Image 1 (cartoon, rainbow, N blue to C red):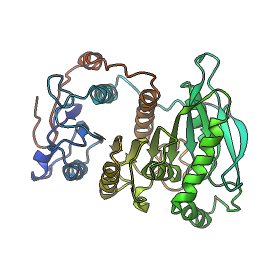
Image 2: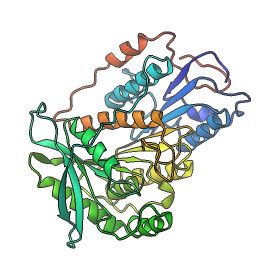
Image 3: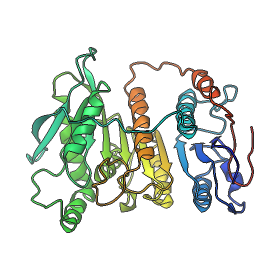
Image 4: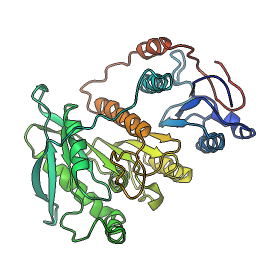
Amino acid sequence: AGHDASAVIAFHGSISYFSDKELPSSPVVPKVLILSGGEDTQDSTQSVIDMEGALNHGNATWQLTRYSDVEHGFTNLFEPAYNPYVDERSHDNAYKFLAEAFGDMTLEADVPDAATTSEVPYEDADGYALTGHVAYPPESFVEKPYPAVIVIHDASGPDEYEQKRATMLSEMGYVGFAADIFGDHGYDLTNLTEVFTLLPSIRDDVPLFVKRINAAIETVKGLDNVDPENIALIGYCFGGTGVISYALSGETQAKGIVSYHGGLSAGLPPVTGAITAKMLIESGGDDDASSSIEDLEKAMNSGDATWEYSRYSGVVHSFTNWDDAAPFGVYDVRADVTSWDHTESFLSTLFATDDAPADESSAFVQMMAFPAFVYVAAALGSLYLV
Protein backbone atom coordinates (compact mmCIF):
# COMPACT_ATOMS: atom_id res chain seq x y z
CA ALA A 1 0.00 0.00 0.00
CA GLY A 2 1.02 3.59 -0.53
CA HIS A 3 3.34 3.09 -3.52
CA ASP A 4 3.95 5.61 -6.29
CA ALA A 5 2.60 3.31 -9.04
CA SER A 6 -0.52 4.56 -10.79
CA ALA A 7 -1.91 1.10 -11.46
CA VAL A 8 -1.39 -2.48 -10.38
CA ILE A 9 -2.52 -5.48 -12.46
CA ALA A 10 -2.43 -9.12 -11.39
CA PHE A 11 -2.81 -11.89 -13.98
CA HIS A 12 -3.41 -15.25 -12.22
CA GLY A 13 -1.73 -13.64 -9.22
CA SER A 14 -1.83 -16.49 -6.64
CA ILE A 15 -4.38 -14.57 -4.58
CA SER A 16 -4.66 -17.37 -2.03
CA TYR A 17 -1.19 -16.37 -0.85
CA PHE A 18 -2.67 -13.20 0.67
CA SER A 19 -5.63 -14.77 2.47
CA ASP A 20 -3.81 -15.07 5.82
CA LYS A 21 -1.81 -11.84 5.55
CA GLU A 22 -2.46 -8.73 7.61
CA LEU A 23 -4.81 -6.13 6.17
CA PRO A 24 -3.17 -3.00 4.73
CA SER A 25 -2.40 -0.44 7.41
CA SER A 26 -2.52 2.52 5.01
CA PRO A 27 -4.59 3.40 1.94
CA VAL A 28 -3.97 1.40 -1.25
CA VAL A 29 -2.99 4.16 -3.67
CA PRO A 30 -2.66 2.48 -7.09
CA LYS A 31 -5.77 1.45 -8.98
CA VAL A 32 -5.95 -2.35 -8.89
CA LEU A 33 -7.08 -4.80 -11.58
CA ILE A 34 -7.22 -8.50 -10.75
CA LEU A 35 -7.68 -11.06 -13.55
CA SER A 36 -8.39 -14.52 -12.19
CA GLY A 37 -9.12 -18.01 -13.45
CA GLY A 38 -12.16 -19.80 -12.10
CA GLU A 39 -10.26 -23.11 -12.00
CA ASP A 40 -7.03 -21.63 -10.65
CA THR A 41 -6.19 -23.55 -7.48
CA GLN A 42 -4.16 -20.55 -6.33
CA ASP A 43 -7.11 -18.17 -6.80
CA SER A 44 -9.95 -19.84 -4.89
CA THR A 45 -13.35 -18.17 -4.71
CA GLN A 46 -12.83 -17.55 -0.99
CA SER A 47 -9.45 -15.94 -1.62
CA VAL A 48 -11.07 -13.62 -4.16
CA ILE A 49 -13.66 -12.64 -1.54
CA ASP A 50 -10.87 -12.08 1.00
CA MET A 51 -9.00 -9.92 -1.51
CA GLU A 52 -12.09 -7.76 -2.07
CA GLY A 53 -12.28 -7.25 1.70
CA ALA A 54 -8.60 -6.35 1.96
CA LEU A 55 -8.79 -3.87 -0.90
CA ASN A 56 -11.92 -2.30 0.57
CA HIS A 57 -10.11 -2.04 3.92
CA GLY A 58 -7.40 -0.07 2.13
CA ASN A 59 -10.02 2.10 0.38
CA ALA A 60 -8.68 0.98 -3.00
CA THR A 61 -10.18 1.60 -6.41
CA TRP A 62 -10.34 -1.90 -7.88
CA GLN A 63 -11.84 -4.11 -10.55
CA LEU A 64 -11.89 -7.88 -10.34
CA THR A 65 -12.62 -10.03 -13.40
CA ARG A 66 -12.85 -13.81 -13.23
CA TYR A 67 -13.16 -16.38 -16.04
CA SER A 68 -14.61 -19.91 -15.92
CA ASP A 69 -12.70 -23.08 -16.83
CA VAL A 70 -9.36 -21.25 -16.66
CA GLU A 71 -6.38 -22.52 -14.70
CA HIS A 72 -3.24 -20.87 -13.35
CA GLY A 73 -0.95 -19.48 -16.05
CA PHE A 74 -3.68 -18.79 -18.63
CA THR A 75 -1.60 -16.04 -20.27
CA ASN A 76 1.59 -18.10 -20.57
CA LEU A 77 2.05 -19.26 -24.17
CA PHE A 78 4.32 -22.08 -23.03
CA GLU A 79 2.05 -23.56 -20.35
CA PRO A 80 -0.66 -26.23 -20.85
CA ALA A 81 -3.10 -23.85 -19.12
CA TYR A 82 -2.70 -21.22 -21.84
CA ASN A 83 -6.09 -19.97 -23.02
CA PRO A 84 -5.92 -17.74 -26.12
CA TYR A 85 -9.43 -16.33 -25.70
CA VAL A 86 -8.94 -15.34 -22.06
CA ASP A 87 -5.38 -14.19 -22.74
CA GLU A 88 -6.59 -11.78 -25.39
CA ARG A 89 -9.64 -10.70 -23.40
CA SER A 90 -7.72 -10.12 -20.17
CA HIS A 91 -4.95 -8.18 -21.90
CA ASP A 92 -7.49 -6.00 -23.68
CA ASN A 93 -9.06 -5.39 -20.28
CA ALA A 94 -5.66 -4.47 -18.87
CA TYR A 95 -4.79 -2.19 -21.79
CA LYS A 96 -7.92 -0.11 -21.32
CA PHE A 97 -7.52 -0.12 -17.54
CA LEU A 98 -4.02 1.36 -17.95
CA ALA A 99 -5.16 3.89 -20.53
CA GLU A 100 -7.65 5.29 -18.05
CA ALA A 101 -5.23 5.09 -15.11
CA PHE A 102 -2.51 6.97 -17.03
CA GLY A 103 -4.96 9.63 -18.22
CA ASP A 104 -4.68 8.61 -21.87
CA MET A 105 -8.39 7.81 -22.10
CA THR A 106 -11.39 9.62 -20.64
CA LEU A 107 -14.31 7.40 -19.79
CA GLU A 108 -17.55 8.72 -21.23
CA ALA A 109 -20.70 6.87 -22.25
CA ASP A 110 -21.63 7.25 -25.92
CA VAL A 111 -25.34 7.82 -25.33
CA PRO A 112 -27.48 8.53 -28.41
CA ASP A 113 -29.46 11.77 -28.39
CA ALA A 114 -32.61 9.82 -29.15
CA ALA A 115 -33.72 6.25 -29.69
CA THR A 116 -34.29 5.12 -33.28
CA THR A 117 -36.78 2.36 -32.55
CA SER A 118 -40.15 1.30 -33.94
CA GLU A 119 -42.98 -0.17 -31.88
CA VAL A 120 -43.66 -3.90 -32.16
CA PRO A 121 -46.82 -5.25 -30.46
CA TYR A 122 -46.62 -8.94 -29.53
CA GLU A 123 -48.02 -11.53 -27.09
CA ASP A 124 -46.69 -14.22 -24.80
CA ALA A 125 -47.76 -17.87 -25.05
CA ASP A 126 -50.91 -17.15 -23.03
CA GLY A 127 -51.97 -14.25 -25.24
CA TYR A 128 -50.87 -11.56 -22.75
CA ALA A 129 -50.28 -8.30 -24.65
CA LEU A 130 -46.78 -6.82 -24.69
CA THR A 131 -45.10 -3.99 -26.57
CA GLY A 132 -41.49 -4.08 -27.75
CA HIS A 133 -39.34 -1.64 -29.69
CA VAL A 134 -36.90 -2.61 -32.44
CA ALA A 135 -33.85 -0.81 -33.84
CA TYR A 136 -32.21 -2.01 -37.06
CA PRO A 137 -28.55 -1.49 -38.00
CA PRO A 138 -27.67 1.40 -40.34
CA GLU A 139 -27.47 0.61 -44.06
CA SER A 140 -23.69 0.55 -43.82
CA PHE A 141 -24.01 -2.92 -42.25
CA VAL A 142 -24.63 -4.90 -45.40
CA GLU A 143 -24.18 -8.47 -44.14
CA LYS A 144 -27.59 -9.98 -43.50
CA PRO A 145 -29.27 -11.59 -41.65
CA TYR A 146 -28.21 -9.79 -38.46
CA PRO A 147 -27.66 -11.24 -34.99
CA ALA A 148 -30.19 -9.87 -32.51
CA VAL A 149 -29.78 -8.68 -28.93
CA ILE A 150 -32.83 -8.38 -26.70
CA VAL A 151 -32.79 -5.84 -23.85
CA ILE A 152 -34.74 -6.83 -20.71
CA HIS A 153 -35.79 -3.74 -18.78
CA ASP A 154 -35.21 -2.67 -15.20
CA ALA A 155 -37.72 -2.07 -12.41
CA SER A 156 -39.00 1.13 -13.98
CA GLY A 157 -40.43 -0.82 -16.92
CA PRO A 158 -39.67 -0.58 -20.64
CA ASP A 159 -38.92 3.04 -21.43
CA GLU A 160 -36.54 5.30 -23.36
CA TYR A 161 -33.50 3.94 -21.52
CA GLU A 162 -33.90 0.43 -22.94
CA GLN A 163 -34.79 1.86 -26.36
CA LYS A 164 -31.53 3.83 -26.36
CA ARG A 165 -29.61 0.67 -25.44
CA ALA A 166 -31.34 -1.09 -28.36
CA THR A 167 -30.25 1.79 -30.58
CA MET A 168 -26.65 1.45 -29.37
CA LEU A 169 -26.77 -2.26 -30.18
CA SER A 170 -28.06 -1.50 -33.68
CA GLU A 171 -25.08 0.80 -34.21
CA MET A 172 -22.88 -2.24 -33.49
CA GLY A 173 -24.53 -4.14 -36.34
CA TYR A 174 -27.17 -6.04 -34.39
CA VAL A 175 -30.94 -5.88 -34.35
CA GLY A 176 -31.65 -4.34 -30.96
CA PHE A 177 -34.99 -5.16 -29.37
CA ALA A 178 -36.25 -3.57 -26.14
CA ALA A 179 -38.57 -6.22 -24.70
CA ASP A 180 -41.60 -5.78 -22.46
CA ILE A 181 -41.98 -8.07 -19.45
CA PHE A 182 -44.63 -6.12 -17.54
CA GLY A 183 -47.29 -5.50 -20.21
CA ASP A 184 -50.40 -3.58 -19.13
CA HIS A 185 -49.85 -4.17 -15.42
CA GLY A 186 -51.90 -1.36 -13.91
CA TYR A 187 -49.26 -0.38 -11.35
CA ASP A 188 -47.83 3.10 -10.76
CA LEU A 189 -44.11 2.61 -11.32
CA THR A 190 -43.32 5.98 -9.74
CA ASN A 191 -44.64 4.59 -6.44
CA LEU A 192 -42.05 2.34 -4.77
CA THR A 193 -44.67 0.48 -2.78
CA GLU A 194 -46.40 -0.54 -6.01
CA VAL A 195 -43.09 -1.33 -7.71
CA PHE A 196 -42.17 -3.72 -4.89
CA THR A 197 -45.56 -5.38 -5.25
CA LEU A 198 -45.19 -5.94 -9.00
CA LEU A 199 -41.53 -7.01 -9.15
CA PRO A 200 -41.62 -10.18 -7.04
CA SER A 201 -44.78 -11.37 -8.76
CA ILE A 202 -42.66 -11.88 -11.88
CA ARG A 203 -39.08 -12.10 -10.59
CA ASP A 204 -39.89 -14.91 -8.16
CA ASP A 205 -42.08 -16.76 -10.66
CA VAL A 206 -39.22 -18.00 -12.83
CA PRO A 207 -41.42 -19.96 -15.30
CA LEU A 208 -43.46 -16.79 -15.92
CA PHE A 209 -40.34 -14.66 -16.31
CA VAL A 210 -38.83 -17.18 -18.74
CA LYS A 211 -42.09 -17.35 -20.68
CA ARG A 212 -42.12 -13.56 -21.16
CA ILE A 213 -38.47 -13.64 -22.28
CA ASN A 214 -39.18 -16.46 -24.72
CA ALA A 215 -42.08 -14.43 -26.11
CA ALA A 216 -39.61 -11.66 -26.97
CA ILE A 217 -37.23 -14.18 -28.54
CA GLU A 218 -39.96 -15.71 -30.71
CA THR A 219 -41.04 -12.23 -31.80
CA VAL A 220 -37.49 -11.24 -32.70
CA LYS A 221 -36.98 -14.45 -34.67
CA GLY A 222 -39.91 -13.42 -36.86
CA LEU A 223 -38.56 -9.95 -37.65
CA ASP A 224 -37.05 -9.16 -41.04
CA ASN A 225 -33.34 -9.89 -41.52
CA VAL A 226 -32.81 -11.54 -38.14
CA ASP A 227 -30.56 -14.58 -37.83
CA PRO A 228 -32.64 -16.86 -35.54
CA GLU A 229 -29.56 -18.86 -34.55
CA ASN A 230 -27.72 -15.79 -33.20
CA ILE A 231 -29.72 -14.22 -30.38
CA ALA A 232 -28.47 -12.88 -27.06
CA LEU A 233 -30.08 -11.27 -24.01
CA ILE A 234 -28.91 -8.36 -21.88
CA GLY A 235 -30.73 -7.21 -18.78
CA TYR A 236 -30.61 -4.41 -16.22
CA CYS A 237 -31.58 -4.66 -12.55
CA PHE A 238 -34.85 -6.66 -12.64
CA GLY A 239 -33.93 -7.64 -16.19
CA GLY A 240 -30.44 -8.63 -15.07
CA THR A 241 -32.03 -11.04 -12.60
CA GLY A 242 -34.26 -12.35 -15.38
CA VAL A 243 -31.50 -13.17 -17.85
CA ILE A 244 -29.54 -15.00 -15.14
CA SER A 245 -32.65 -17.02 -14.27
CA TYR A 246 -33.15 -17.71 -17.98
CA ALA A 247 -29.64 -19.13 -18.34
CA LEU A 248 -29.67 -21.12 -15.08
CA SER A 249 -33.00 -22.66 -16.14
CA GLY A 250 -31.22 -24.32 -19.05
CA GLU A 251 -33.09 -22.43 -21.77
CA THR A 252 -31.43 -22.80 -25.16
CA GLN A 253 -32.86 -20.15 -27.50
CA ALA A 254 -30.31 -17.48 -26.49
CA LYS A 255 -26.60 -18.10 -27.15
CA GLY A 256 -25.53 -15.79 -24.34
CA ILE A 257 -26.69 -13.41 -21.63
CA VAL A 258 -25.29 -10.26 -20.03
CA SER A 259 -26.53 -9.17 -16.61
CA TYR A 260 -25.90 -5.69 -15.18
CA HIS A 261 -26.53 -5.08 -11.45
CA GLY A 262 -28.82 -8.12 -11.43
CA GLY A 263 -29.89 -8.02 -7.79
CA LEU A 264 -28.40 -11.37 -6.80
CA SER A 265 -29.51 -11.14 -3.17
CA ALA A 266 -32.99 -12.22 -4.26
CA GLY A 267 -31.64 -15.75 -4.74
CA LEU A 268 -31.14 -18.07 -7.68
CA PRO A 269 -33.34 -20.72 -9.28
CA PRO A 270 -32.17 -24.33 -8.94
CA VAL A 271 -29.90 -25.62 -11.68
CA THR A 272 -31.16 -29.01 -12.85
CA GLY A 273 -29.24 -29.50 -16.08
CA ALA A 274 -26.68 -28.09 -18.47
CA ILE A 275 -26.42 -24.31 -18.88
CA THR A 276 -25.96 -23.66 -22.59
CA ALA A 277 -26.04 -19.86 -22.68
CA LYS A 278 -22.67 -18.20 -22.11
CA MET A 279 -22.88 -15.79 -19.19
CA LEU A 280 -21.33 -12.35 -18.58
CA ILE A 281 -22.10 -10.79 -15.19
CA GLU A 282 -21.36 -7.13 -14.36
CA SER A 283 -21.68 -6.38 -10.64
CA GLY A 284 -21.14 -3.47 -8.27
CA GLY A 285 -18.80 -4.20 -5.39
CA ASP A 286 -21.14 -2.35 -3.01
CA ASP A 287 -24.29 -3.85 -4.57
CA ASP A 288 -24.15 -7.65 -4.71
CA ALA A 289 -22.61 -9.18 -1.61
CA SER A 290 -19.52 -11.32 -2.09
CA SER A 291 -21.50 -14.28 -0.75
CA SER A 292 -24.06 -13.80 -3.54
CA ILE A 293 -21.28 -13.90 -6.14
CA GLU A 294 -19.96 -17.07 -4.52
CA ASP A 295 -23.42 -18.65 -4.74
CA LEU A 296 -23.72 -17.62 -8.39
CA GLU A 297 -20.31 -19.03 -9.24
CA LYS A 298 -21.29 -22.35 -7.65
CA ALA A 299 -24.60 -22.39 -9.55
CA MET A 300 -22.93 -21.65 -12.88
CA ASN A 301 -20.31 -24.32 -12.29
CA SER A 302 -22.97 -26.86 -11.35
CA GLY A 303 -24.45 -26.45 -14.84
CA ASP A 304 -21.01 -26.47 -16.50
CA ALA A 305 -21.58 -22.92 -17.77
CA THR A 306 -19.06 -20.77 -19.60
CA TRP A 307 -19.02 -17.57 -17.57
CA GLU A 308 -17.20 -14.36 -16.81
CA TYR A 309 -17.91 -11.78 -14.16
CA SER A 310 -16.52 -8.38 -13.25
CA ARG A 311 -16.85 -6.50 -9.97
CA TYR A 312 -16.18 -2.80 -9.41
CA SER A 313 -15.22 -1.13 -6.13
CA GLY A 314 -17.46 1.50 -4.60
CA VAL A 315 -20.21 0.81 -7.14
CA VAL A 316 -23.82 0.40 -6.05
CA HIS A 317 -27.01 -0.65 -7.79
CA SER A 318 -28.17 0.80 -11.15
CA PHE A 319 -24.65 1.93 -12.02
CA THR A 320 -25.49 1.96 -15.75
CA ASN A 321 -28.40 4.42 -15.49
CA TRP A 322 -27.11 7.64 -17.06
CA ASP A 323 -29.59 10.11 -15.59
CA ASP A 324 -29.33 8.92 -11.96
CA ALA A 325 -33.11 8.74 -11.95
CA ALA A 326 -33.22 5.14 -10.71
CA PRO A 327 -34.52 4.99 -7.11
CA PHE A 328 -32.19 2.15 -6.15
CA GLY A 329 -28.68 3.31 -7.06
CA VAL A 330 -26.20 5.81 -8.48
CA TYR A 331 -24.64 6.07 -11.94
CA ASP A 332 -20.93 5.21 -12.20
CA VAL A 333 -19.20 6.07 -15.46
CA ARG A 334 -16.25 3.74 -14.85
CA ALA A 335 -18.44 0.68 -14.35
CA ASP A 336 -20.89 1.66 -17.08
CA VAL A 337 -18.32 2.25 -19.82
CA THR A 338 -16.17 -0.73 -18.84
CA SER A 339 -19.12 -3.11 -18.63
CA TRP A 340 -20.41 -1.95 -22.03
CA ASP A 341 -16.96 -2.48 -23.51
CA HIS A 342 -16.98 -5.99 -22.06
CA THR A 343 -20.38 -6.51 -23.63
CA GLU A 344 -19.22 -5.42 -27.08
CA SER A 345 -16.33 -7.88 -27.12
CA PHE A 346 -18.47 -10.64 -25.56
CA LEU A 347 -21.13 -10.28 -28.27
CA SER A 348 -18.55 -10.07 -31.03
CA THR A 349 -17.06 -13.39 -29.95
CA LEU A 350 -20.47 -14.95 -29.27
CA PHE A 351 -21.69 -14.21 -32.79
CA ALA A 352 -18.39 -14.90 -34.58
CA THR A 353 -18.78 -17.06 -37.68
CA ASP A 354 -15.48 -18.83 -37.13
CA ASP A 355 -13.01 -19.35 -34.32
CA ALA A 356 -10.24 -17.01 -35.41
CA PRO A 357 -7.14 -17.40 -33.23
CA ALA A 358 -6.29 -14.64 -30.82
CA ASP A 359 -3.55 -12.20 -31.74
CA GLU A 360 -1.16 -13.24 -29.01
CA SER A 361 1.11 -10.21 -29.29
CA SER A 362 -1.04 -7.21 -30.17
CA ALA A 363 -2.41 -6.46 -26.71
CA PHE A 364 1.01 -6.85 -25.09
CA VAL A 365 2.65 -4.56 -27.65
CA GLN A 366 -0.06 -1.94 -27.10
CA MET A 367 0.48 -2.04 -23.33
CA MET A 368 4.24 -1.74 -23.58
CA ALA A 369 3.74 1.65 -25.25
CA PHE A 370 2.66 3.03 -21.87
CA PRO A 371 5.18 4.48 -19.40
CA ALA A 372 6.31 2.44 -16.41
CA PHE A 373 4.18 -0.61 -17.19
CA VAL A 374 4.76 -3.51 -14.83
CA TYR A 375 3.12 -6.86 -14.26
CA VAL A 376 2.51 -7.37 -10.56
CA ALA A 377 1.10 -10.06 -8.33
CA ALA A 378 -0.63 -7.79 -5.79
CA ALA A 379 -0.76 -4.33 -4.22
CA LEU A 380 -0.94 -5.15 -0.53
CA GLY A 381 2.08 -4.37 1.60
CA SER A 382 4.72 -4.80 -1.12
CA LEU A 383 5.00 -4.52 -4.88
CA TYR A 384 5.84 -7.90 -6.40
CA LEU A 385 7.34 -7.75 -9.88
CA VAL A 386 7.06 -10.83 -12.09
